[in-house]
Length: 159
Length: 159
Image (cartoon, rainbow over all chains, first blue to last red; front, side, top):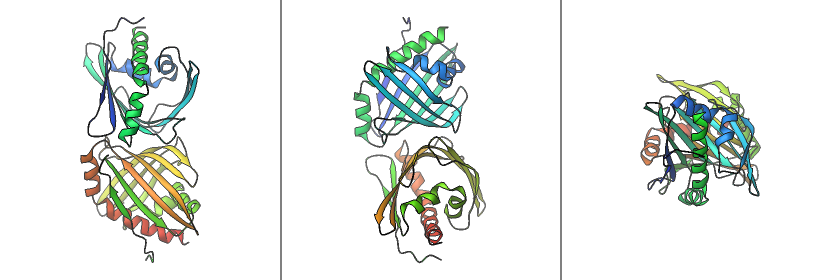
């Protein structure tokens, strides 16, 4: 159970095929960053409730790469990408694709912004090469997975 | 000196911040692909005439990464990225950035299309997150570097 009242904002850009997700956390950037780069922590909070994340490999450093499998509710699918740049407690730039749609590759940027008082604003953007692809991604129900995942991340950050 | 009559087409997309470069080569996909994945060959043809390419690392496989330095005519700059997917003789999906503008990261896709009779059509797309960034890239004089690089690649492919 989460006691957080933070809202997850999902903003569809009007000019370019990009989605921007903004969320605040009651933890400092170092801790939010670690939950994104440590594979054991990442697997605990990523994805919708009731799904399991199995890490295949996850080397979150500049030039590294990742692959994990999400399973639950009759679904099982792999997700993979490479890390273009990882700046500690500040920025992750990476690629991302679902193996079910291997040519639908996104360029993602996660920004960790220090709000002071042990709080962080996380801004995550996802850029693809068509508005149709972007809108299909938004319509896929990703919102539930993002919101539920961030609620589990809230809980993880209180430990 | 090149005897090729192939034109390099550089097409600016009107809907999304993407540039598409199309060029044919008188060599089969396997050979054009190898000139993109073998660091020693890559360094021979990449960039404008009169510039040297020094490979720092270049591991062109799914999950690998690269960095190289281009130097000449008073300029010296690093370029880097990671390889999201490498499908032999068919496709390379990668990130790309110039270290002088570290936050200007592009998602690039290089498609090797077999035209038969030992010929290949190469289509290279570069996607960024703003039209301003895309237009600045096109206006930077990249066209000369691309055209001269592909002319040197023509020569390399005849060896």
